[in-house]
Every structure is written in structure tokens, then in C-alpha cells.
Length: 43
Length: 204
Image 1 (spheres, helix red, strand yellow):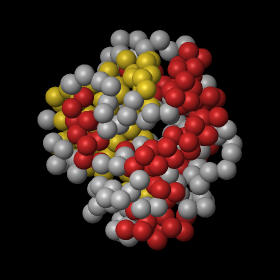
Image 2 (tube, rainbow over the protein chains, first blue to last red; image 1 turned 60 degrees about the vertical axis):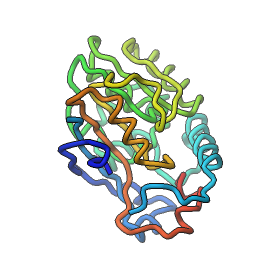
Image 3 (cartoon, each protein chain N blue to C red; image 1 turned 180 degrees about the vertical axis):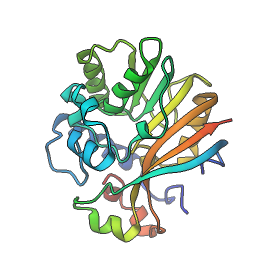
Image 4 (cartoon, rainbow over the protein chains, first blue to last red; image 1 turned 30 degrees about the vertical axis):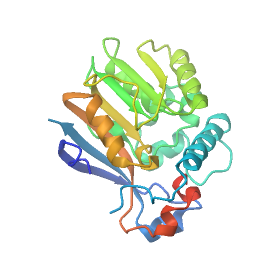
């Protein structure tokens, strides 16, 4: 999606277990929901 | 992977629910929510620097409800114009303002009046005069083309009804060579249509 928008050098830099310990943890695990850090640059 | 809403999702209800939830986070961050909030969460789960957070007004950190950490992606250089889309009570915005320094500017955008007011108050309490907060929408940013060196966003664009439009707006406001330090949630498995139509699950 970011590449389609025109960005370059798109890269996932880090992931986080954002919903651990919340009431949505089970559904988050079922669908593989994680927090991520992404870098992108406008050429 | 679906990047747009189901055609019969009530977009107005979604936006109202988002405003309502985050107004509540602004007014009562210790209330009951389906997601973590606050500086301890930010440090323990998202690797924010505790010492840096301790220097910020409590009003900005207590209501923090981000999902990742844009400040770990790349440094924000002194003198930068930084835009924070969905700035909330201002924790990321104030950190960005400190990095940008007095020669730079940090502009926060939020669609929730309560959060925008809280961010402005936090900036005043922090003594930061390079901060501005504008009421606005991620899909139609109140910013000129090519006006930002850096755009950050934390747990916000996943709430938009059309990610392609939202990403297009980020691209529009960045200067050539500008960087997008993007923090959000992703799903590994395709969501069912019924899940994607459930407004409660959109807002956590």
C-alpha cells in the first residue's frame, strides 16, 4: 500500500505485542494483530 | 488484503465511535478500555525511554494510547517540520517537538476536540512554543503540499475508512525526500467480512 502511494525504501523496522494482557488479546492472537514500526521515504 | 471498508460499513458511526472513545481516553484515561494506555505501557511494551517520558506533562502521557513507537524508527533532526497525524493528548507530538528543537516545528493533527485541547495544554505546560495543534482528519489533512520534513503517526491510520486515501495525504504533505515514521497495527490473517463490519472491533 505504501509503495502504491509512491513511497520508497519501505521497511518494517520493529514489532510489538501491543494487545498482550488486554481483553482483546485472544482475538488479536487469532488474527495475528501486532504493532509495527515502518519506515518509508518520499522520493 | 483488504485496505478499504466493506461497502455497507456505517462510516459516520465509525467516526462517531472513534471520537467518543478517544474523548473518553482524554477525560478519564484510567477508565476501562480494551487497550493499554499510559507511560508505563509505553515504556514496558513499546520501548519508550522512561526518563524522556518523565520529563513530559502527565496530561500528555496518561492518555497515551499508541500501538508502536515512531521515535525508534529514525531520528528526527533538529530544525525539522514534523507532523503528527492523530496526535491525541500529545505525547509523541511533544517528543517530536523536543527533537525538532526551537528552529523546528511540530504540528499535531487530531479529529477529537478534547484531545486537541489536551495536546495544546500539554505543550504549554511543557514550555514548548514550537508546537501547533490543528483539528483535522487524516483523510484530508489541513496542511499544504510538500510542507513537512517528517510525518509520524501512531495507531491512527488503521482507524481510517480508506487507507489508500490516508497514505496519499501523507505523501502529499511530505517534501521530496521526506520521511514517514509510521507506527500502527497490522493483521497477519485476513479478517472476515463480519469482523470488518463490526465497529466495536475497529475501535478496540
